[in-house]
Amino acid sequence: MGNELEKKRFKLPHIFVLLTGIIIVAAILSWILPAGEFDRIQNAAGRTVVVPGTYHYIDRTPVGPFAAVMGIFNGLVNAADIVFFVFIAFASVGILIASGAFHGLIGGLLHVLKGNARLAIIPIFLAVLGLASSTIGVFEEALPFIPIFVGIAIGMGYDALVGLAIVAVGVGMGFSGAAMNPFTVGVAQSIAELPPLSGGLYRVICHLAMFVVASIYIIRYAIKVQKDPTKSLVYGEDFSKFTMDEKAIADHPFGIRQKLSLVAFFVTLGIFIWGVKVQGWYFGEIATTFLLMAVAISIIMGWSPNEFAGKIANGLGDICVACMMIGLARGIKVTLEQGHIIDTIVYGMSIPLTYLPKWLAGEAMLVVQTLLNFLIPSGSGQAATSMPIMAPLADLLGISRQVAVLAFQFGDGFSNILFPTAFAVVMAGIAGIKVTTWWKWLVPLFLLILLTQAVLIAIAIGIGW
Image 1 (cartoon, helix red, strand yellow):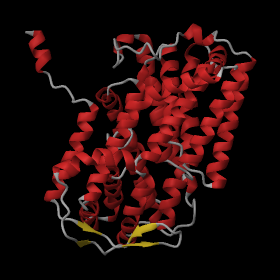
Image 2 (cartoon, rainbow, N blue to C red):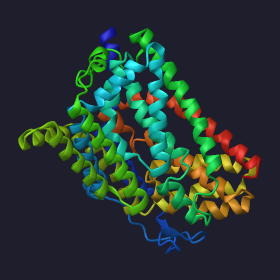
Image 3 (cartoon, rainbow, N blue to C red):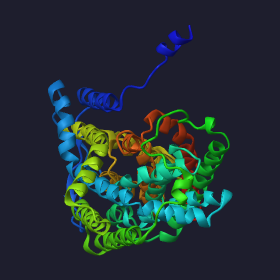
Image 4 (cartoon, rainbow, N blue to C red):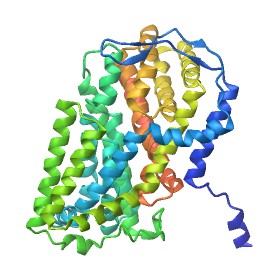
């Protein structure tokens, strides 16, 4: 009887099936919703933005069955820059892992941090990743570090969810509370005609508030798992390819080659930060920097060209499925664009805001921007589509444009690690965790963060920020 019930229990489809299903739903919507679009112009910064009040209907362009399936291919092509960046960066960081340099660094930390003090590793790396995300827009760039932290978390007596959370929550929180992220805050403020990076102090406070909430949530779960491993949501699942014994980590060799490899890594990060901030680098330049780092580490470790190529090939194989997920997720956006219904959805979601009182309109903006991120997971893309509407709408409602930008970045940031159209399935796949398990762990934290964000928006409106 028990086996029959187990067989009848609902099981979420494979992630490829789920994402393909969403593409099909998007295609069906293109037959139901009216096609429409806003007029678009180039603003003073050279960005293409919508013109408020110009939404109009256009001839329908419904997406047929063949075109819907072709959306899978088109999604991969459209996301080629991210897909190939992840391929190269992941394989390159795999070279760093193979050198043992990172293990040696963590081993040193474990020697310094004894007992429960080792829990400090969680907020330390949450803060580091959050800072990188908040300032220079690190997000996809952090994906290659997921296996490292999964292995570290397991080795310290926690579980794979803790390791994934350190990376995913760190960058998601950094985007949400970004002080000077050029891809979100920078773009949104330029469209809203606000001084560049203005209001940074309050956004730092927002980041710190979310950091405290997230740290407490993750640490409480980590302690629970450490005390009783059966309490882990992934108890009994095989993570042998990530597993590192704590004693093995603590006693891991950390000789001159490993130290020089670590120096190469930090030099690479320095060059990467300089390139993004000063030279305006994007995926191509960053991927090249990671690849050069991998070559340098290979020379330091004394590996032959064949050994280096073999390790790179292993890394490419490990990340292949996750890269397919990125393409499938992008296929959803491509299908909605082909049906010309994204602007229709944005316009429809903005209309109810005009009827809300000031104190509630800010919270509604947060909800709308969060939902929009399901359709437009690109931060700069969402800013270009929604901010030309939300900024003047904020004026009509008596809300500052800073609050409109804050609602945008709150909605865009943290939901990136929740929605299947963004990076939830990719991150879970890299960590070897079922996306349903990730959602089960993450949803309570997501709701806590959403509540925190709502309070922060209410305070911003209350103080006239």
